[in-house]
Image (spheres, rainbow, N blue to C red):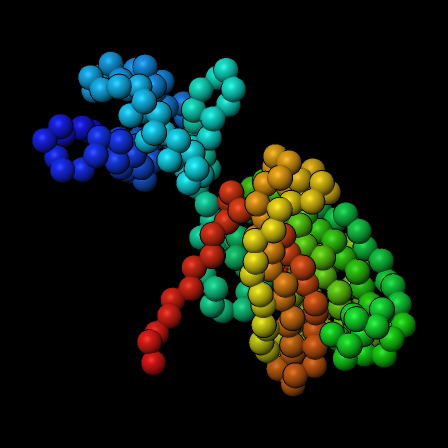
Length: 241
Ligand code: 16G
């Protein structure tokens, strides 16, 4: 792992070494890495140097420390392409994860002025208000609240929401989902989100707000999705035109 003649600083070499052990699977999620003392003895370097390398990897989210227990490898993040308009169910299946949902709230409410204008419906017309925890292999990934016109999409039930909303819209309602616009920003998890996503107080969250439209331009849904920043990263590819 260490070449003392290399122009690269020793701590960078340690960082790179641990990083490649994680990438090639030699170190797996939740494995303990050797202690500072062990690295220091093995490579004949100071513990300060080792600490610097490990702290950098902790700050990057690749490792996590547990008081009194040691330092461990984090779960790898799910990498989500910000291209095609896909559903959570499709995204997870495409990665070989089993998607599931835990329903927190399901109600038909009269549209507020804000929701009515976002969905282009009359104020007080009925809308579904649905909040679900979205899980992959039983691990909470996101907490998501959807508003949808109940006059547009009829017959949504708890059983349907446990499965896929997009499936219901396209298969049962035979409507065509066309396009969406969304914003992505960083926020700090609220207490409620912290609890449901099983993350530490004050954890960063990736907040996506999506407006989805049918092919004919009718607004379909307004969505607020709070994704765990320790489990998710989003990628976009760009062309210089
Ligand atoms: C995704 C969408 C959400 C949509 C849901 C449908 C984002 C940020 N949000 O979570 O807008 O309502 O999928 O999922 O990607 P479903 O078909 O699995 O119910």
